[in-house]
Amino acid sequence: MNEAAVGTGGRVLGLFQGARLTPTQRRIAHSLVQHGPSAAYLSAAEVAELAGVSQPSVTRFAMALGYAGYPALRRELRALAAVPATPPETGENPMQDALRAETRRLERMADELGDLSAVERAAQMLVGSRPLPVLGLRAAAPLAGYFGYFAAKVHPDVRVLDGGGTILLDRLDQARAAGASAVLAIVLPRYPRETLEAIREAKELGLAVVALTDSAVSPVAEAADVVLPAPVGTQLVFDLHTGPMAMAMVLLQAMCDAAPETAQRRLEEFEATANRRHIFEA
Image (tube, rainbow, N blue to C red; front, top):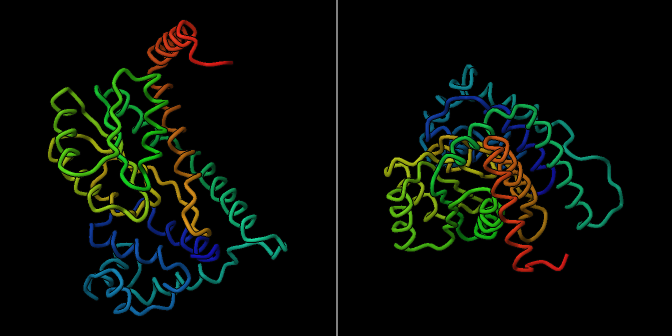
């Protein structure tokens, strides 16, 4: 998806923010976001085919957003698609364009963090979970490990779940039996089926789910108690995960703010241990 599509997709996503959508309606919303400007010129039947739903579901989706029907929603989508999504040509190379687009995404994320209620709610859930499972498979595995490494400095029992198979469900069972009350699920495109299945299992076990994902209408959103959206960059061969990494650190900061005395004590203990063992050169 090019930057114009990414920009339009972000504006389309704004139409759905705060709406209470059914799982079927979330699939429709996700398809519209993913297809960017081209979605504005699709018929209801074509949208239904893309999302794998019925045509009446598309009509009900438009009405759930407050439109008289799908034609009215499509007019709004076309208006959004007509808004320039990128600055004038700069003559820079594609690598520079990709990084500048990432900067703009981070700026939008910063604007959205004017309301910290979701981040603070997520932090409260996670800081109180003993142990704290952090789930991330495939493309999300490195970010799960990154978050887990730093979270372990301020949380007494962080368990990174970055391997699939039946042992993943065993580890969820073990975390719940040990007292876990919540799980952080990092879910990035292309949304591994195994991750979504593990999240459903976590819900059945009674765990609250905080989802760090690329979009408020990502497939994990319908199962999550709190969704923290952080868009990924799509201009290079492989996605840029700068946004999700930034959101992970914002969440960890909020966890420290939610339990400042515990966080400070554990940081001091870590520094004392690091000095005694001469772990770092500087």
